[in-house]
Length: 124
Image 1 (cartoon, helix red, strand yellow):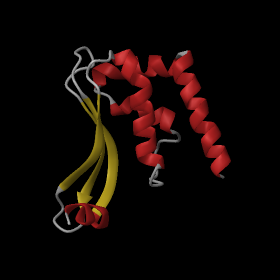
Image 2: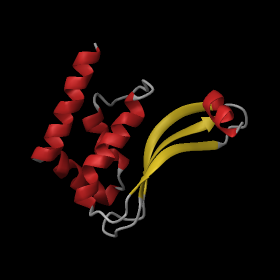
Image 3: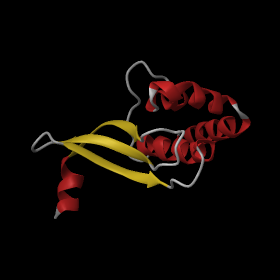
Image 4: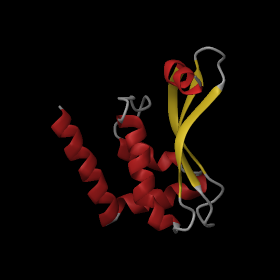
C-alpha cells in the first residue's frame, strides 16, 4: 500500500546528494526528491552508496546514479541547465563542487559524459 501511494503521488522536484563530507568515508545517498501530491510532504527515493570507498572512487557511481535518476523517468533538467554535465557539480556541497568539476574533466569523467551523450543520441 505504501509503495502504491508513493508511485501514484510522487511529484519529482530535483536530485540531491545527501552526505556529511566527502573527506570522511561516510555513506553518500543519491536521492530523487519529490513532494507528495496528497499532503505536500517531502518524499525521497534513492540509493545509499558504500561508505568504504574514497570520494574519487565514488564519483563514477554518483554520476551514474544521479544521471539515471533524471533519465529513468524522463525528468527535465532544471531551467537554465543545458546538460547533466553542467548540473552534476551543483549536486555537491559548495566546498566539493570544484572537486566534482575537476573529476568531470579527467578521463574517467569524460568517458562517462560520452557514454551519456551516446545513449541520448541513440534514444532520439
